[in-house]
Length: 528
Figure 1 (cartoon, rainbow, N blue to C red):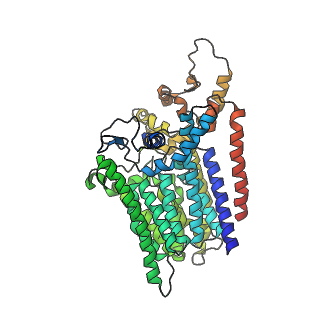
Figure 2 (figure 1 turned 45 degrees about the vertical axis):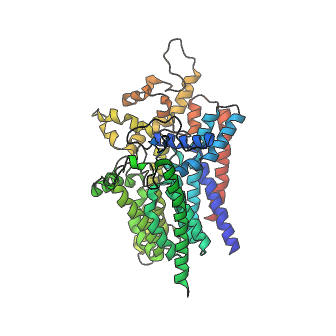
Figure 3 (figure 1 turned 90 degrees about the vertical axis):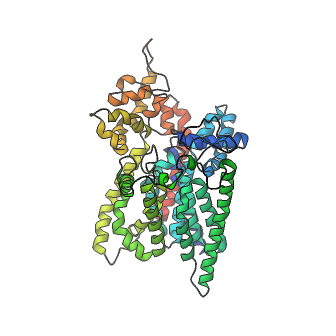
């Protein structure tokens, strides 16, 4: 039993290294929206002054970026846990920058931008452990984890921006995994702390509290004293959650004067303001919108009708958890006023439910076919590889071209009948931009290698290298500051190469990461 546990842990560790390596290789290493910059501002303030006050903040009406507190200072309305977790990354990045004689502020920000690559990989590892502890084979759990890592928008959200969703997903998965990992009160208390941290990351996570309390009760052992054991674990879980909520409430009192004021009160002061979207219209939007619709950016959901019945028969408790988490999320965000979630490639607000949509696919990945519906199993098994390849392609299309270009160009698209069709879908727009983004590095380096004639009007390193090669609506992007960010691949080392960095300085680090991924992949392959 101990050897088996060690093997599972070793596989999970290798899986973490593999996913983290790929995420690091495809990370943007930069911030491109106000949410990320605001949370980073809190991290920087904590690091430099030990304060939650946002540095250089000016209040914007109905905005979470800068909320005035009872002491007259300005604070972020976002959860503080993400900013706190980023502190070690900022500290290490600042130290590296100072030691190497580089801009410590820039290097520190880059390290924070890389944080979610590790967070997303750790979330995948916890998903693997949860699946194994729930009774699935190591092989099936591993394959499902790889689908979660590379065939869902978790890849995008873990490599672009400084979003809070990957960290929230980590804590939420950690809560379920901890409850499944043991039968003691201690494991229940750990799960409660993890969920409390999730709420400190995203306050909306409170809607999952009843689900986790019921889950804590159901996964406890059944025996002569099962009722007491179940109630004890559910109680310890609840106590740990309440302890965390008290901390967050006290923090809210110190900043905004009330435990129930989180910062969102300036934007959503009432329930009617919070749920202003017609639910049926909202459900259509969060599922089928061209920019954040779950169906388009997570095609694996098309396999769920064929796999969930068997999943429910074999693992009814986990099925309950998945149905409850997915169902409550769809209901909440369908009515939520800001259902879109801002600039994003795929569903940002719904990204924490992705593991709960992948879990029901387990029967498809197991070694044993469904004896009740062998013909259905064979049909799905033949169809599934194409869906998986399509899902992988969707993620790659979102990883390489900069997603922000779609939102910058959207007003241009909407005023031109020639490009109006591109305004409705970030997926299609990124697919159109994919070839030019891939070839941009070679074109930029070739252009820089040629001596520039006097008064040629050639742009500087921070803008597009060859403006004469830019056609159509894309010419608008040339007017943006640092417009290279809208043309080059949104991958840190490729962009560095496009800006003129020498390959001899870039490739050693890239090769080290690639080697780590290769070694981890070999170890993971043995487990399958």
